[in-house]
Image (cartoon, rainbow, N blue to C red; front, side, top):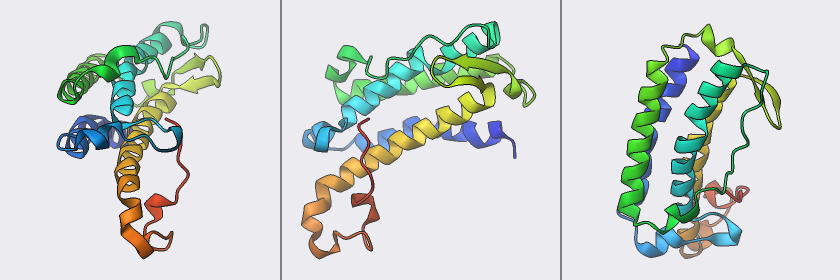
Length: 178
């Protein structure tokens, strides 16, 4: 297995996974925001924003500039008014944007050898294309995890005595901001 074989299926399946998690959720679920975390709509808006301004733009930047010029900084909260759009529109927009990103990535014809190419992250320094691609996949999984934890947290209290790390660890893990 290669890195491309590992990461591309994750990237392809994320829109379907997010759709399955959110499509039939009540409005209260989508807007649920415990402890200052992002809610489901904000997570989805962030994913759309990343498709438009982060992943493929950084791949192209790395290929064009190597480590001579750092990536433009990514505004992780830059999703603006996207979050106000109806959930079905957000889900469809994410699916469309991701298909476009994957088509753009495929059109580059990159090989495993290309993944060793080096770019410059504004905060982390030298990174490889492999680092960027793996991060894209793990980023997706992080937000899928976040969406499932939000759903579990809404149901946490009614679980009663089962709400314990030995039984429901999802309710007792560190809760990131976004």
